[in-house]
Length: 195
Image 1: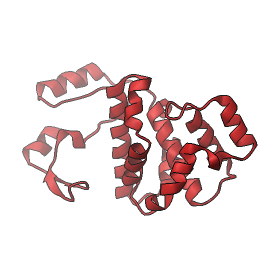
Image 2: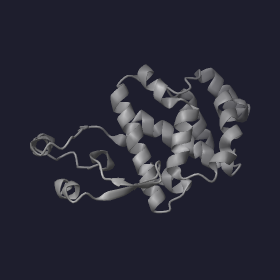
Image 3: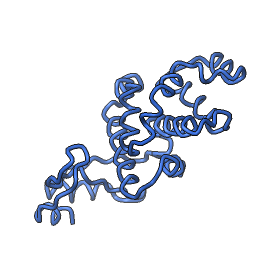
């Protein structure tokens, strides 16, 4: 099927370039169940010279990049609504504070939550500074901005599997872009990423 698409020279709208361009293999993702014979898929794609990258036995819900992204977006959502007492806001703060992205000490996290000083923490203050700029962006632009603002890609080296984590971040951006096309909101992104 993919080969037919490429032979007919389909075009896609490139939101970054703001114009139509020829479709490329990177515009597609195939999601298959764990029971799928991935070796057969790889052989079939290889015979047709279609590049393929297979990730096996990975539960994306537990992927660190998805968890950090989901919690950054959730923190932003509650911040935009100034709902700082919401348990989800507090949970997102704790998760992010303990993550590879910020690596706060448990004692400092506990103190920030207990003394209601979450808003004084550096990474939260940074988000407060840009939140209004993010309010009117698309989901993809929000995620891209958060990735750049917190320099997430540079942290991939610290947690290992740089290429795999980069691929996950690109997959998350594609999901956000797809949700944009369906007019989904930040809240929808949060709800979908909890599935």
